[in-house]
Image (tube, rainbow, N blue to C red; front, top):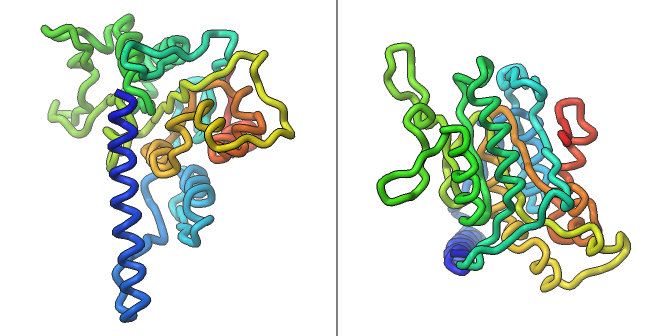
Length: 287
């Protein structure tokens, strides 16, 4: 599955880049505008909007504003009340990443902790009217999360043995029982294109044992960075994965790895998000 994801990712990114570059070339030739850059977003909490703009758009001169007040995105989920940026730490000692027979990666402990937190919040009074999403870059991790959620009857197996969202968790309904929006989705980044949820978990999956963590002052070639972080280094897909939420983004992963020199070189956006969670009053790090 991973190699199929890589091919689809490459085709999508290459086609977009070609069309974008071609439009820019034509603009320079005849002066006719063919591209439009949005200068404001109204989907998410301003802290998260500003984070995405700074990390993914400002380097290319295409930053945007997030003018809506934080009060419009408030929530009272227990333990993270009114927090917009949250990191749930899953250190390497709790279990390493693994690969299934298709070579797709998963991390069991991350899946279990996501299932536990999701169950607590989605069934709470504070979360009963909120929508939730769980994103991973790896199909194997999606399967592992779906399997872990079955312990709480949030997912169940269909006639073919595949895990699906249980009926009570599929949709949010209005006071007359009519469906309003999807209540819970678990999937890869690509399945979340164009979607939005109140609360989004991003499962990092990639982890390293403490003994193999790399020195702070070392420089690493791109191929070594790819070995450690893989899909997380895709800027376009990482941007999609951290911009699907409205109220709160929760990254679940190994914070010790993300603070190494190789992470600063390979995935500086994730390091910046961890620092946001750690240092901003509207952020939190859960251990």
